[in-house]
Length: 246
Ligand code: NAP
Image (cartoon, rainbow, N blue to C red; front, side, top):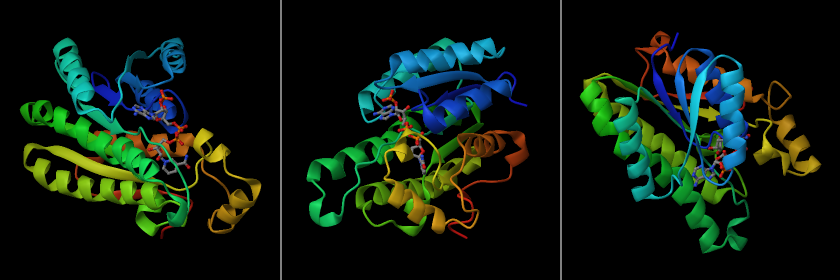
């Protein structure tokens, strides 16, 4: 389905990003597994993809840095001549109630989640415009759609990603580029492992499907949006959340 396509997945060393990288590769794409701190884990993802018959490399870059992302994308374009699929998945949480939230925790979540998404799109858009084709998929969150107590920084970053997605969809549609967001609900990863049992139980009670989602359920949605099957879909926010935000 994605044979011959070059895909960059940010934050693909673990969790949802890892699964997206594997699923894109399984469908034929050449995948660049981006990471920041977890070099070894990213290399393991590459090895798993190769063992499965796919093609991938790992590439370290802090997406919060404008100049680092510029360098990464310039180097990838020089080497591979094109980038067909960009998945902005890198993200962090620093949860706290607003009264206790530090300026640093607000800023770093916005820097990585929202500015990181801007950075990659900013630097890749020139190449995609030249190609007159491309698929950009931004990983938002149900928190950015509904809001979530204790996540002012995170929800603001994800709501920002939704605004960015819709604006990019309008700007880039005339050149055949699709820009969409996927908004996961509670998915089983290291990000949600740290939640207390009480918080997990409370979360499950709000999910119509009464369970957390699997990383694969998000990854398969991303593959759909990256494929020609989604050629007439742009500017949308697809919630993969067991029904939370209906
Ligand atoms: P995770 O397991 O904590 O993984 C986060 C990934 O982001 C890691 O690969 C990490 O790489 C990367 N990352 C962090 N800072 C980075 C930076 N500055 N530059 C490049 N990469 C960076 O998280 P996850 O649960 O898989 O979440 C993935 C995405 O889905 C995030 O955007 C998150 O907000 C979103 N999401 C998750 C859930 C959920 O329930 N899990 C729900 C809604 C949305 P390194 O370790 O190499 O730094």
